[in-house]
Image (cartoon, rainbow, N blue to C red; front, side, top):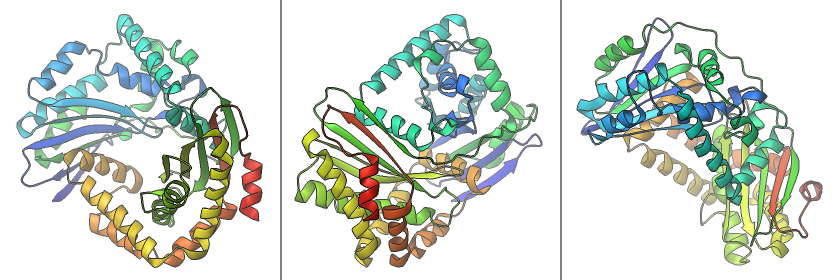
Amino acid sequence: MTTDYHTLPNGFRIVTEQMPGLQSAAIGIWVSAGGRHETEAENGIAHFLEHMAFKGTTTRTALMIAEQIEDVGGYINAYTSREVTAYYARVLKDDVPLAMEVISDILRNPTFEDSEIEVERGVILSEIGQALDTPDDVIFDWLQEQCYPDQPLGRTILGPAERVRSFGKEDLRRFITEHYGPEQMILTAAGAVDHDAIVRLAEALFGDMTPRAEYDIPTARFRGGEVRQVKKLEQSHFALALESPDYRHPDAYAAQIYATALGGGMSSRLFQEIREKRGLCYTIYAQAGAYADTGVTTIYAGTAPDQLKALADITIDEMKRAAEDMTDAEIARARAQMKAGLLMGLEGPSSRAERLARMLQIWGRVPPIEEVVEKIDAVTTEDIRRFAEHMAVKAPAALAIYGPKGPAPRLGDLQVRRAA
């Protein structure tokens, strides 16, 4: 497979990867304009804009956008995260020009009809309501807010309902003007693609865009804290966050391997000790996430209210034990899981296209898979034990608990247990 790059004079970047044997391609544009690029008054507008992308342009109605892609058997979609908004499609190789033209149209020529704004406002408000009714979704928004209080990175992607109710056409256009410049965009394509042909199309579709100053996002600072929300539910939901490395930090791979060994699968310590041996929960896991300037390792579980304190205490005990006796076999297993997840995930063009964009945003290049595997293999048991000790004892923490009223651990109690 060959990875090729090109940058237009206006700063618009293009990266492609040809995958021999495929008859289809994934293509999309990743924009450095996510939730953390919003002001407090704009919270939720990046996601609102993503919804409006498919509601009509100066040349296509919403129905035409859907029909033109689906008439050729493809699909088109988008998502918003805290650091990017992505617009992407999957089509057969002969329909790549059509997909590029449609994506260009929805990004550059949206109409933002008042009637469509109102329709989509209702859809997003329903989405917010659905999230609030899903405990293992909403608890992570509350936890994120405790990690980064009064900061853009701590706000929800959907935004509060009162903000969503206030957004209008001019708000959407202003956000595009400020954040959708050519330097903030990366066009990626993977699968049955021709790099030179895609560059020519990109020049025609995006080459006339005017460069603009990049938005300067505030540096995130993990603060920590706790939140408790009482609701009559069957279970209590527990989420613990610990400050972790950003994605350029030397310990970034150690953080992922540690989270996998601690709670990344059925053989992990938390799963075995808390679910299999003690039967305290159905779901428990740990995961490591990273941003440009910070990161978070999260542990989540749902359990009966009267078992919550025991579950939290054992979680801390297992974190401390990992710092003392994490074995070579556990680390090897976690490395294998991480490599397999990476390599299996990249067997499809959609995941490859997303990786191209993410790597280019982070590193300014796309590291070969072999280079990533070497970095994973280079993490030693000593590295993990050192990292585990920091996480168990020193890393700043945040806690979120959601469920029935009753006895529940306080963050201070867990901090005392960590230090004991």
